[in-house]
Image (cartoon, rainbow, N blue to C red; front, side):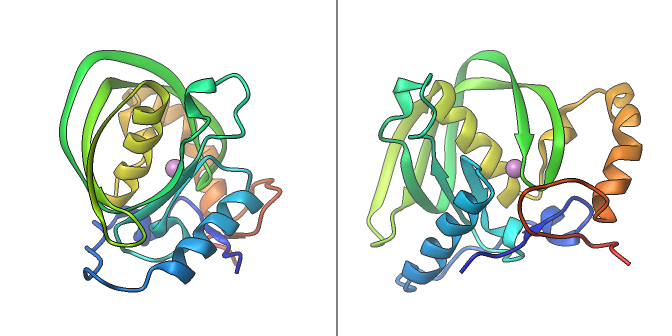
Length: 184
Ligand code: NI
């Protein structure tokens, strides 16, 4: 099932998402998350973006041809915890399915140590760096109620104010179905 993507301005994107009870059957929700992400041509999607305030996100970077590093980077992350972030800070342009048509440079540390569960509730602890870390950090932020625009300077934020207001009203062009909080 393809869900509409929740737009900027919805309170669910600002809530800290809840842990999922260990052992819960995740098969259907994870499948829906992948389906929704593919329908929107995203490389990452967090559960709050489909209106579910739970600690789950999915990634698939395998289709990025110029990122051979990501050829096996397709998986769900359940109840993830960033145990450590280190390495040099680096800047990269980010976008978000919940904030369409806005892309801005964001600075983040290059490496993370992440503990998470897979869909069978096996626990993993793994170090990710580069693009993998970047995608995870962005999606993980969604579970904390944080968005990439929060990292921008006050000036940049002011410049985006009008666009963001329009997104909240659903006044934005997307090729995927959206749910905008202030749509009349
Ligand atoms: Ni996002």
